[in-house]
Length: 448
Image (cartoon, rainbow, N blue to C red):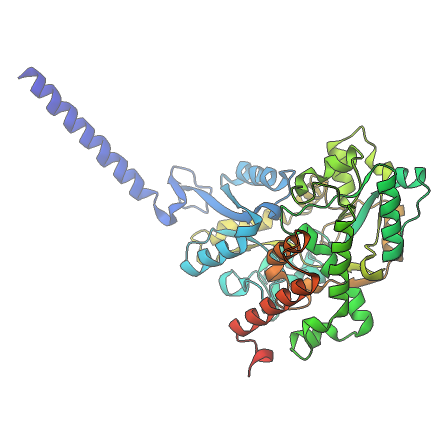
């Protein structure tokens, strides 16, 4: 009898505990990302708010500076940021599904520009930020990448992207090599490096994006033939297959791979190992932004990257203009979020001049941010070099249905390298996907 009473008492206690837990859960269930608490930091709601921040791997700096700034924001406001990171190759499809199903995170990181017909159309899903004070401090080219019809929907930070061949100047000097100005000279340099016992180029296909850069960062070649080529492609007045430079460069990529200039392991190389490859002088060149030099310097301080490494324009197809990409990863606030005010507060925090300075200092791969009043990290020599170059907008931010198939193009190039596709097959595959996407989007240029 005594045991029975004890069991009954324990049962009542357990039931009370369960009821208390259920009541606590109901009190904190607003939106699924808040927990009960006494904090009044979330605009007087009496809750501790956690904002979900969805991004792809390359959407956030590898240095962790954004997470560090998020911790600063939490210390100031009590609002936490929960970062949810997905693989690059899956993110575009994943976030589209989440947006369409109403399950997207509070803050979303995606590539811009958002005005292209082939973009994710963040203007349809995001909070209008046009009236925020900091919008006027973003540089115009960056603001246009996150705006549609004069309304701004996102915030972005990095200055214009420009991809070069980053190379070891010391090795070039030791082998009496000059910076190549055209493809023929480039090929000759690669052969001399190979003869000297070096892998000329660090290429990596496992990440899916890196091998695609030579195709579309060289849009200056397209524009030199016809300054209106981008508009004509977007209106479907000319076909992508008619751009001879595209097939030429694809053929050249294949030629260099077959000649061994990428080394034996390029099909299993990853971008994450590029810094080590150059710092150990296992490889001599790789395609990267100039800020890559700072990354190598930070990770391999004994190498002397800032003295040993330089940059030159990618000479594929005899190109000598630098491709400028004014767009970058940008952050947007889900208009269906229950915490729009708190997310706007985080954006306001990131846009403070002192936090822009902190971001620039803590992100070695960039040398500038796209904000007025913030000095760059470029040396006088580097700035003079950049100023001397002819510049042209890259294809992927100017022509519809290119950027949206970037990872697929990477797979096509892999197939070419393994012999499953020819250069002509790759061109036709890119063109077919582009046409299919345009028809799917009911693009007026493709209307029958």
